[in-house]
Image (cartoon, rainbow, N blue to C red):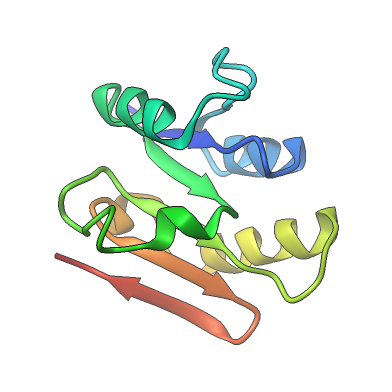
Length: 120
């Protein structure tokens, strides 16, 4: 069974498409009917459903609020420039280097300079 992934509404739909092309059961926050929800509400539902979370919202990278090993995993994409292309390229970089299944439970931060993992 494919890993279930939720893509935050701050990311382009191309990110969802790319994850699907890599075999993941990916859906956007909007597709799941959670657009505009507060972070706390969104987080609770994602965790209840056992979904890995992909976002550009740096708040989800705060390991004091979201400690590694207490959740299904967060991938924080932090490009150096705005736009769809930098986000998609960063996501592709992560998918080339890792299987998301191997990042479950970790807080992963991807920047153009590299990929950092924080595990519990």
